Image 1: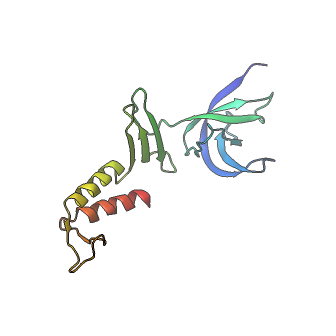
Image 2: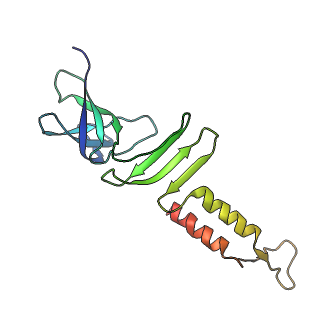
Image 3: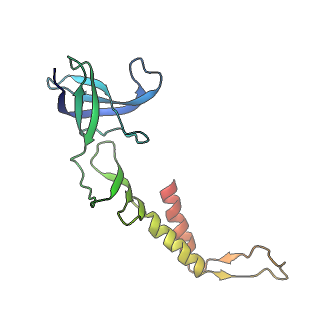
Length: 171
């Protein structure tokens, strides 16, 4: 018997215990060719895990002589558009329907790492924070002690704005 693999569509997925396994794994509900919905374990690269959103296309690999012995080995989301340049790696998340990009981590070919969600870009937020600190006014304590902490007055509001962006990324 040769290898049998088919492209199927995800109905839903979740982290749960599958079959006799002692630990949890991602299990996808996948539409079979006859419309039947099958629960199938999703296999991943070590150190990376994701639950495919509804509507995502998957490759269902049949391991034995029946569809009962099959696993999901790859996923592709045609509902969103992402760009990646040669040599780059992009990790992204979407909403539950797979129709909207929510957050990205881009490892650029230049070595730059960009982390971004729908509202904030980590590099931009850190740049604003650094600029705010550089532009802040230092007010020494009256009669202060040498080496004591110096309070910073954020006269431009840049530090507060940058901290808000960082909190938005890290929340």
